[in-house]
Amino acid sequence: MTPETFKSLLSGYRMDSLSPEEQQQLMALLHDPAYREQLENLFTEDLSAPEFPVTAGKETLDLVYEQVKLHTGEAKVLAFRPMRWVAAAVAVLAIGIGSYYLSSMPATLQSDPISYDKGEHILPGGSKAVLTLSDGSQIELDEMANGEIAKESGVKITKTADGRLLYSVREGLAHVKPAFNTISTPRGGQYQIALPDGTMVWLNAASSLKFPSSFTGKDRLVALTGEAYFEVAKDKKRPFKVKTEEQEVEVLGTHFNINAYDDEQGVKTTLLEGSVKVKLPSNKSALLKPGEQSLVLNDIKINQVDANSAIDWKQGLFWFNDENIYSIMRQFSRWYNIEVEYRGDVRNIRFGGQVSRMKNLSQVLRIMELTKSVEFRVEGNKIIVMPYGMSAEKPGKI
Image (cartoon, rainbow, N blue to C red; front, side, top):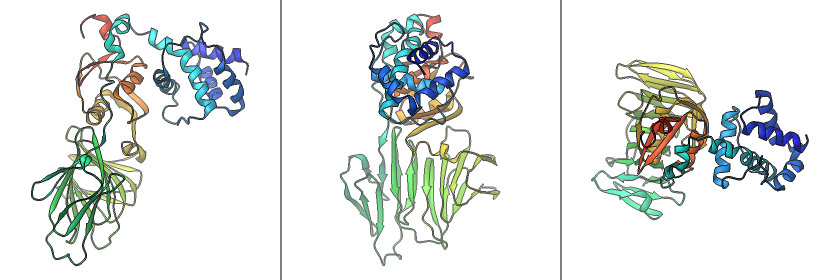
């Protein structure tokens, strides 16, 4: 590869004139160690030449790289590693095409200050939850110092150094009637808890889990609203049951995720390890195998899925697989604690790929806008979603 070839590919990408084969050639060059030295030399050249106009800072360069992966279809499989030579080459690519995407936006967006302030003040969620004890008292867990935070019915509740909630039952207290606690996460919060039997639960935003301070009966029953991922401690004598409004899941020891938000269509249970039985109030049931997902919507439907995509939130990701804009914005609404309004016809807008949940909302919205399929306007804590170009068609209005 010669520097001229590389610059030609960058220029072609900036002008959106590359063939699919040339796009793949460009991405292959960026990730081929054989060209490490050449790419580094290119990066250290004077990049003020017309074909490499510097138009933005590091944040925008990172965002444009996300668009490169999305545009070439690599967003679903490419995990960027910040090795020095790859990072340098990506920066060159971003500089080369950044002005194209930014300058191609309608004039009203360029001149409108809000287009450069699309939610910088809206930060991602974090470790937040409220623990409600059986007597009605509440504990704001994110504000509590580490260590013992409460005692109830012979059970000690401890907040660990890594932010988990740990229940430990004193020996010889099996005869004590357990008290029921509820842990709830707000919009923009998530939390991890170790139940009295050792089961680990990760609670997603806007969710709650009701559970006993100790498991003393013939089964281990908890009640869920929202979404949670479970790693159930094995106990052959006492099955673990998760009850939602539409279904009950029964296991002995396994790893699975339940999405039971009220604003989603149906309840999804995804199995990663072991086996679970999904049971309806009508007593109809189905047994899931790893890699299967049940959808309960009056009946039970079983699908093969990539189970890891169901726990993207636990892994710090948004993972979209040809997902419609309404589903995506519902996830953003819960994680960023925002309101969403739609204007215009956005029914056919869909996205695929991955993006970190740790990004500020402004970064995520810019990545999506670079696809030139959707536009966003931020008004305080409300996000207005529009088809791309709508604000340009009606200046001053949306």
